[in-house]
Structure formats: C-alpha cells, structure tokens
Image (tube, rainbow, N blue to C red; front, top):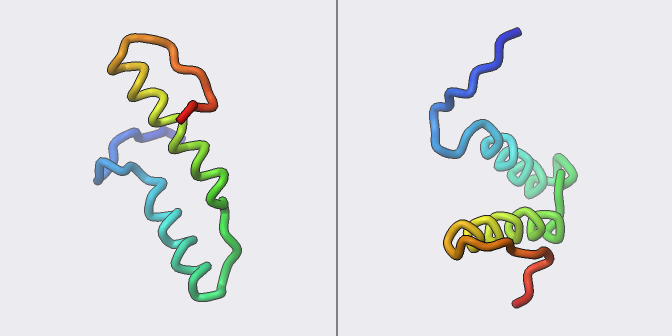
Length: 65
C-alpha cells in the first residue's frame, strides 16, 4: 500500500473524524474519543512549539502561565 500525504484541506485527514465523533457524542450515539484534559495537552504542545520557534529557545512542558 502506498501512503499519500496530499490532502484536500489544510486540516489534513484527522479533523473530519474528530468532528464526526463530536456530533455522534452530542446525539448520544458514541463516547468521546478524547476529553478536554487530553485536548489541552495537544494545545499546550502546539503553543510551546510556536513559542520556541518565535523566541528561538527551548520551551519546557508543562507551560507556566
């Protein structure tokens, strides 16, 4: 099988699956694949990467607010 890294959107292939899960959870048809705490970890990692690129330095996790 060949992998294709071309996407039809800047969001890649993961967002539609996530949104489907959210909709199905709101309908009572599924359980959340992730919770807010786990989502916050991803967001914190993205923020740390932006800070590191902007400031040209290492950024430790967890972030200190």
